[in-house]
Amino acid sequence: MDTHKKNLQQGQALIFTLGLSSLLMVSSLGLYSMIHTLFERKKKIHFCRKALVDIQTELSHSMVELLKLNPQAKKLRRKKLLALHAVSAAPEPISKSIALAHLAKVQLEQSLFRTQQKSIIFKAKAKAQNKKLYYKLKNKLQFGPTPFALRPKLPFSFSPSYQLATSFTRKQEIKAQIFSPHVSQLTCRVSLKKSFGFLLKFKPQVYEDQLETSS
Image (cartoon, rainbow, N blue to C red; front, side, top):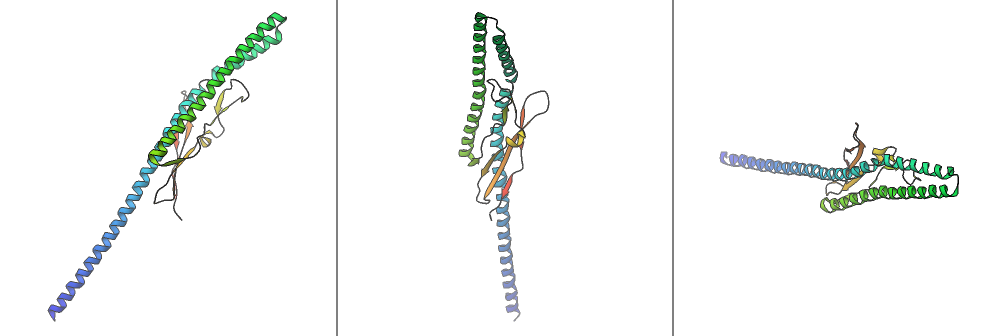
C-alpha cells in the first residue's frame, strides 16, 4: 500500500514537473516572440528614419544653394529697373536703341539665371527620387510626396528671390511606410528646420514614429 501511494505521489510530481516545464517553455517562447517583434520594429524604424534623414539632407543642400543666389537675384532685378528707366529717359532714337539693347541683354541674363534656379530645384527632386527608389528596393519602404518648401517672393519675376514657405517645417515633412507581419502599418516622419546662427543651413527634424496595429 505504501509502495502504491509512493508511486502515485511520484507520478503526480512528474506530471506537475512536466506541466510546469511546458508552461515555462510556452512563456519563454512568448517572451522571445515579443522581444523579437520589438527588436524588429525598432530596427525597421531606424532604417526608415535613416532613409528620410538622408533624403532631407540632400534636399537641404539644394535649398541652401538656391537661397545663396538671392543677392544675385536682387541685383538682376535692380539692374532691369535701371535698364527700363534708361529706355524711358532716352532723349533720341539712337540712345533709345542702345538702351533697348542693354535691356534685352539684362533680360537674357535674368532668363539664364532663372534657368539656373529651376535647374537646382529639378536636380534636387531628381536626386531625392533616386534615393527613394534605392531605399524602396533595399528596405521595402513606401514614400510619400517629396516637397521642396521654398517659394519665390516675386513669382512673376525672371529672377525671383526664394524664401521659406509659411509653416516650412510642416510642409517639408516626408513620410515613409514599412509593412510588417506584426503590424498593419508602421510610419516614420522626418522634416527640416532652419538652424539658428549666422550660417545658412538646415537640420533634420525627426518625429516620433506612428504605429497602427491590426484591427
